[in-house]
Amino acid sequence: MEKKITILPGDGIGPEVVASAVEVLQAIETRFGHKFELDYALIGGAAIDAENNPLPEETIAKCEASDAVLLGAVGGPKWDNNPSHLRPEKGLLQIRKHFDLFANLRPVAAIPSLLDASPLKREVAENVDLLIVRELTGGLYFGEPRVLTDEHAVDTLAYTRKEIERIVDTAFNLARVRRGKLCSVDKANVLDSSKLWRQIVEEKKAQYPDVEVEHNLVDSVAMKLITNPAHYDVVVTENMFGDILSDEASVITGSLGTLPSASMRSDNFGLYEPVHGSAPDIAGQEKANPAATILSAAMLLKYSFGLNEEAAEIERAVNAVFEKGLFTGDLAKTGSRVLSTSEWTKEVLAEISTPV
Ligand code: ATP
Ligand code: MG
Image (cartoon, rainbow, N blue to C red; front, side, top):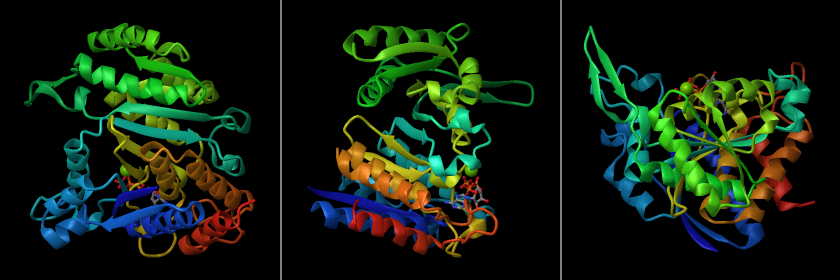
């Protein structure tokens, strides 16, 4: 298979973790006989420094010419008090908007060798394997009108039928290639936007007879993600509920350094990035855990290119390295050996080039 990937290293630890993921993609190319053409471009603070623009035209053009995008992270204290008011994070919001990336996918799966890092009891966390599908371009964060005075403030939670249908279809399609369970999260006992959401999920059910559907209220899901997270397979919800629930779910497995994400539209084009940020406190020190970005590259292969076997091989390799007790500083137990970003990456590469 021949595909084009735009690589956006970004800021902080972004370039370090992206370099690891690129090496892994190259190992997959070699082993499975694919050709991934990689094109690098600027975003965030790096783009502000070079072009005075967090999302330069050239970056958009390169992404448009590619089949998928792999991003590190953007932002850092260097740009927090930027006199030009240019914000690195703006580049990320603009790219999501420009490419209409309405579906944010965040898988949370327990890694057996890391269960000690979870704040939940081992028996609660150990069978977790869920995927949160969050609507990313509508709802309360974008609705009009918006008003803010000292006496009065308004935000608007608005959704069109089309916006709900496309995210719900995405979630159904993901559920049918996983364990066939979909939990739709809303607040239909109070909110009209949730009533329409629930109605559309009910209408869609007939098209996906192989998927078992349940409706849950967001407050109840917030509890159950802690008491019984293994209950869930695919969880679909609107923008703000998804924002909150995906952060809540991210602590279940105990480490930010292992969580990947995807932001997609309907045609398989997607932007893949780790859930964590640019971690300026450890940037440039070879301390970053590259697992989240490596697993984001696996999502890229799976969701944008349909390369399921290759994606599974990356996941297997990452888990195998953890199983050997090899960790970067964020996960290493006190007294045990700490691997640098590139040492840890080499272990993953070795797994991929010498398969079991
Ligand atoms: P942002 O605003 O970009 O999300 P943040 O400060 O909120 O940044 P992160 O940058 O994700 O959040 O970092 C939070 C903490 O987790 C930091 O102390 C950072 O060092 C640590 N951290 C984040 N990602 C990693 C990683 N891949 N490996 C090791 N530590 C990490
Ligand atoms: Mg943050």
